[in-house]
Image (cartoon, rainbow, N blue to C red; front, side, top):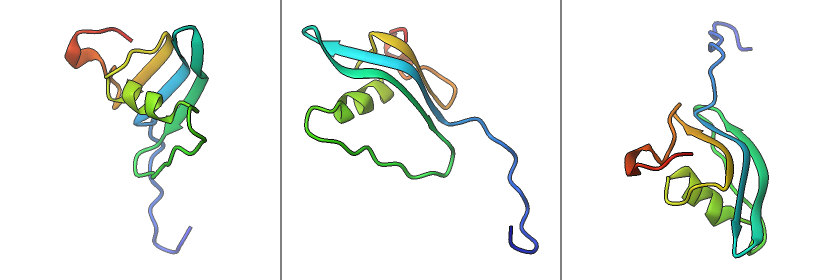
Length: 86
């Protein structure tokens, strides 16, 4: 740590996914995803076509609900604003 730097307190992640699964027409596109994104981080989702990148983003913003698992964005379910449960 640089001289004079103040250590930041340990923070809980701003985005948490635990065991998230999503299938379409019997085909699993997201298989038990666990992900923590801390505040101030920059993250990219990389993968081939059909890997589930867009599905994960849609789950994070509350457009889709996962089939199972839990999702938290800033400590809240992204689906709360639309009346759904995650």
